[in-house]
Structures are given as C-alpha cells and as structure tokens.
Length: 367
Image (cartoon, rainbow, N blue to C red; front, side, top):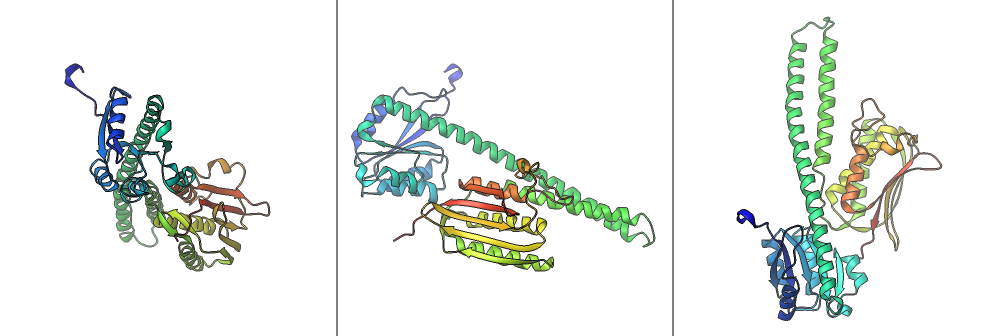
C-alpha cells in the first residue's frame, strides 16, 4: 500500500488435527480481505496447543474449531476454556466437525458459547467465505462496542474522581465555617444545606461509579439460593434500621445458573433498596423457582406500583420520582441482566405492587 502501511490482519485460528484441513483453509482464503484487512492464520493441532495460542493472541478474531482431536470432546473443552478460563467474550467460535454425532448441534449451541456450527462436508468455498465474513463482521462490531464501553467507563470513573475531590473540599470548608459561627447565627442553616447537598452529590457519584464498573460478568455455574438468602438477610437488617416491617414469604428452591455472583448480589441489593424506598411495609414475596424452561428469580411487593407515565423511564440512569432519590437502582438491575443475557422482568401486578427480577436460562447439574 502507499507509504508502506499495511493494516493489521484479522487473526484466524484453525484448530484441527488434520494437516489437509489447515492447507485447504489457507488455500481457499488466500486472497480473502475484509474492511481492507487480510487474514493471518494461526494453526493448532491439539486442544492444548489451541489454548496456548489463544492465551498468546488475545486479539484473535475467529476460531475454526474441530471437535474430535486428541479425544472425542477436545474441541468443546477449547471452547469452554476460551469463554470461562481465558474470559475472551469477543472472539467468534465456529465449530467445524466431521463427526456430528460426537457434538450434537442443539447441545453445543445451548451448553457452549458457540457462534456457528458447520459440518465439514457442507463447507464449500463459497459457504466458508460467507461464514468467515459473518464472523469477522460480528467480531469487528463487538470490538467497537467493547472499546466504546471501556472509554465510557474510564470517563465516568475520571469524572467521579474529580467531582468527589471537589465535594469533599466543599463539605470540609462548610464544616469549618459552621464551627466558627455561633449557634444563633442564621447562616448556619445554609452551611448545613451545603454539607447535606455535598453528601447527596457524593451518593450520586458513588452510584454512577458503581454502575460504570459493573461488568462484564465472570460467568460460573452458581448456586443461586445462597445468594438470594444472603440478600434477604441484608434486606431484613436494613429494614430494621429504618423501622420497617414486611410480611416476608419465601418461595425458593435450590437452583443453578451461569452467573457472576458478585454482580447478581449487587442487583438483588438494588432491588431490595427499591422496595425500602417505595414500599413502607406489608406483603413481600421472594421467588426462586426452576422448571424445564429456566429459573425465575423475582421480588413481588404490594406497594404503589409504577405510574404509566413513569414506566418508559424507570431504567434511565438518575431517573427518580423521589426528591432525594439517586435513581440508579433499577438501572443497575437492568444492566446486570443485560450483561448476563437474561430476560429482565419489571411489571405492575394486577393486584397491586410490582414484580421485578430475571428469567435465567436453565443449567443442568453435573453428573
């Protein structure tokens, strides 16, 4: 290219124990180009070799992955390693298998974070070209979203740091002035307001900072019931401190889900804090129940519900109908759900109050 500049190529890792597959892939895609960038091929012939290459090349865009190599499920173990050990959520994984019985498509797509599934016999040169293009385009778009999120998180943390420093200075000087005036001085109430509003601003900054640093999740098979029970204990303690009484009913059972325990705990705390803010007491039902479709995790209250004009805005950052509300609780709850890929539930109950929570995909217990 002019000036000798060559854009960085898209890295494609071919994982297969047959040399002919590597050679054929390189030959078919030798002149491939997408968005002005060509391909750089990396080769692995075993699952262990593939794991090492992934660790050394975090910017790999695509993995073309065989299933049966040193053993019948080596490729699936590579896929699991990429997502759960290397925590690489961006690289696209296309499973190519010559023995589909070893890795049934439905099982693979459900239990592993695989982006496409192809039998080797169906991958003509044209279909391979299409598969590569779709995968790399998806990787490019996900990379742009991830970089944008990182930039926004960094901006939020920087702004929070700057504001926090200044609110501390404002509150500090206001307290000094309060100590230097007589109790009868009418100016004291204004200084007290400055201190209180500085504290309120500190709450907002803290909530925004917590939101910006929430995610992406580190997913593991997690027992959900202990997390729910611990959140209920924290809620009961907080309710006692506010002199609130709730008739608490637990409809819970042992349930397993792919979750980040820390993030889910934060979301549950946000939901219970929302109850404390808007529901002064009465019946409260905590549900954690599983069936063949998945797990429902939700809180049902008997509060005033959400007015129709407010419903479109309840997930907006800093939206609150309370004069002293921060307005980040339901926003945080929704973000945790979206980061996990869960369905988020928030609706008024016909009998009064709201139901809020998640529908979490079912995870099978290991034998």
